[in-house]
Length: 133
Image 1 (cartoon, rainbow, N blue to C red):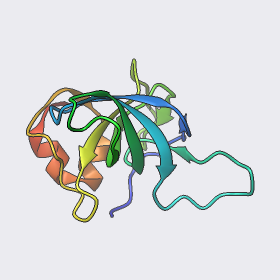
Image 2 (cartoon, one colour):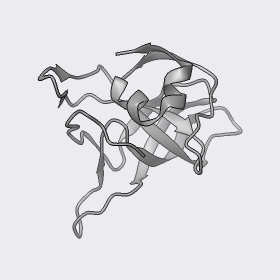
Image 3 (tube, helix red, strand yellow):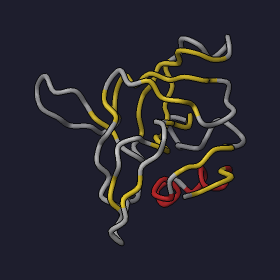
Image 4 (cartoon, one colour):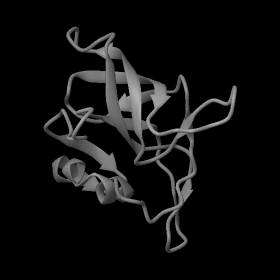
């Protein structure tokens, strides 16, 4: 994985409900673990834009519901700072389902806005996105 140019403040923690931004069949996800997070004892793990997370599907298609999936965070409510000094925040927390080994997206299109920091790290997600902010 590549590095990100912005300083991402980690605004999403364990048990947070996220909107699924792609057309993979899932509607709502719940964060259960953060990939590559190394923290302190009894501290809840946190994630930010561009992080790979492990989620449980809470709402959506009957086939995909109640399964454990990998996802990448594409939007967060907590504001973060970009390298040029501007601060960015979105209206909701959202993620896109990905393949666990190659981190290729499972859906075929993303109709909502995603952050440009995600495209820096995962170019395949940027190819199916309609709007990159």
